[in-house]
Image (cartoon, rainbow, N blue to C red; front, side, top):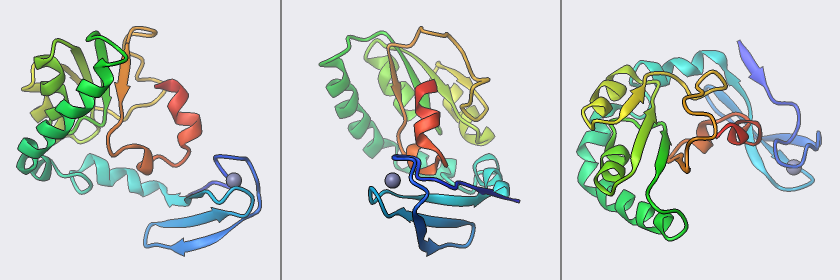
Length: 166
Ligand SMILES: [Zn+2]
């Protein structure tokens, strides 16, 4: 089943045209603001995140040393604006961000739909929920000081409606 987005998720315009057809998705461009976005996706697409096809845990285990460096830089940047407190990592995969955050004094919580990745992430010592982040994934309402979504937004059909929940 296709899930269709009929208007631009940025400006709301319905003047959109097909930018590119892909195997499982249709990419649209907005005439009014130029936004390029996913216009429709196959609802079966979600399974790729559950069964370790998209963002496989082995890939992120191999890139852990590099990712640690990147995440350390990003968290250091975050700490210029927000001292260590509570941080939510949406799409935490095998937990590298969580490990870095914990080592820097943050209380870290991860959300990850891929069961293999979520299990690996639990070894970080952080709380990890094996699920998609959605409105039912309310852990500590108004509790997180920061949220991290690395390589996540581009997978979300309607980022504008999803991000306020974060
Ligand atoms: Zn637009």
